[in-house]
Image (cartoon, rainbow, N blue to C red; front, side, top):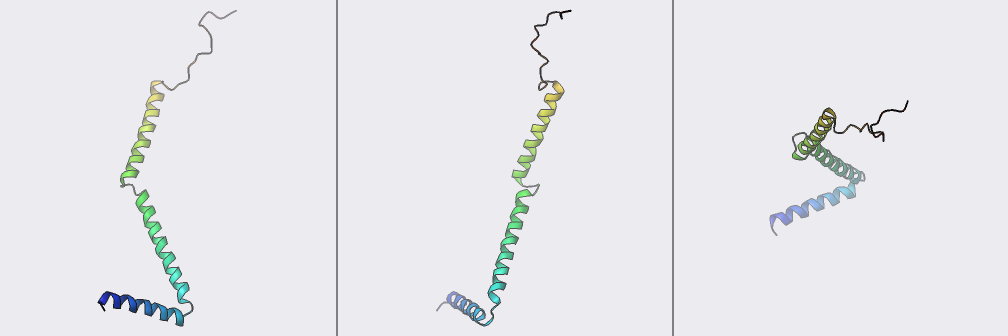
Amino acid sequence: MNPAAIFWLTLVGLLTYVLAIEPLFFNYLLLQVARFFQLIEKQWVKICIHPDSPWVQYQIRKNADRIANQLLNEINGTTRKSDDDGDAGGSPMV
């Protein structure tokens, strides 16, 4: 038998023995698995929202450009509502 098969059989045998002897070991094992997945999820969130990541930089740049365009349009008066009230521009009736 090769060493890898011996290692895995020993590991499985040891886990089976501990599960048979210790009744709370399965609960402990489930807790450790849940903790491991929580750690992975936390690291994934940190990666997704880190300011140096390219997708966050793109989103920041896109939002900054949008806000800058809105500000420039307000300054230049291009987004201002027209003052056209339907009047043809004639003199007011007195």
